[in-house]
Image (cartoon, rainbow, N blue to C red; front, top):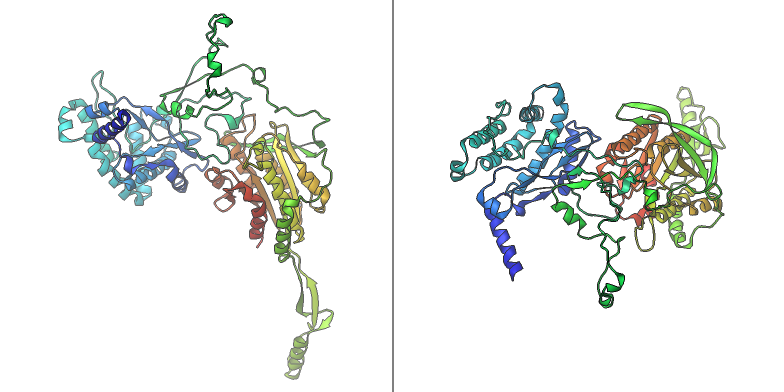
Length: 625
């Protein structure tokens, strides 16, 4: 009863406060793709990703009802840094859902305009008030279609800033003048150069929802340990199959406590009561995740982060070291140096990476697994139709048979006094498909994750490569298969599964069946090596098909935008070599970064990873149609 009354009171007092409208809420995940496309279409940096902004306490003055309701004390402010465009995780500021959605799009357009403005440090004395007004003028002048959306937002937001006449009478004159100046800057951008001076002790102004927060509001970056796993870092990509909502948090640096074991109480073991051992209690172990951890983190204003300088190996040992030479795969050659693109310096670092070609040590020849034989038989029948056939070429100067139609036309021309044609024969020729394809499979450690109760990602990749080879064997097209993983820049492991000159037989099937999860994903170096192999083929059309399950990452700073920009540079090099790269991924977040890498039509996201083996050959058929 108390809980029901409490919920009812919370709904009533929150509605009376009027600071939010939950019924019209629009969440970032609903407009993330639209806002990202708009931001890039208006000239925003295509390398920036769209993510949620942290919720901060603004300490502005609130009404009495809002203080009683405990609402309106925090706000998520849109902001932009060198790698991320951060938008509020949800917007419910207006009673109309369409206005809340318009606010997302307006913030994306304003962020794109802020990028074309000179940096703030080059304009001495420019405040965020002036900078947001200049960005607003840029949007309205460059894209007039945004003017009507902006006017609707201002007309709906200005009364909220000024408040009702009753609240306005209670507002101190100085704060009232400040709010009027902010509203004037919104209605007539560029008309306000500075806010009125405030007496000492005056609360700060409430954040302006139609503007971007300044750099001082951005959370300070926290250095990550060089040996940390990028995929396990806070804010990293989720595992395949996860569909949880993402949140951002503020962080503060603190010193790591020196006590290793915390507070210990001195006690006598024989004085402990053992009766609790007989109670049916759910005692979770330390290895089990806390289901309430995410909710508890969202309730904190700041997360305390400390840099642990102690080596991870001294606390917990993971099997991430390279195996011994006797157990590892066979190394082919001394390694191939490859360049790498550093987007921060905007230079191509020569011979920065070393690609080591490898072959499986224990890969006995084996037949196609029985569960795949029915699917392989169906694919061979479908792809047999793509195999080039023999046809008669008419009107040839030489051939095996006489072209009767051409002979009749030549005799008629001779009787009419014209010069008869000498191309009087039929020739039976076979026209081959002038195609070459290389499939590059990601064999990183993340492929060890389970996609169902029966199979892991690596199992799905094995089946996909086997069925792809069976299907292309029916067409006669030249193709090669390779896989890769990496451990820092000097050990990019490139597995040669099938070369262009090899026949797809039990020996190749054995190599594919011997595949196992590797380490990390230095995708740029693997693409450059695959480009060299595919570039050497004489085919007129060459396709680079990439199988991936996540973002590029490695231990030595090859993470985030650095890895994405290097991968993009490698794809640009492949296109300059007249290759057609195409990515097939099972990463559900792939739509957020793959358009920047491959373009809007250069990739596909498979929502159900178990469908990859049967759909991969069909993607190839569509690409070569």
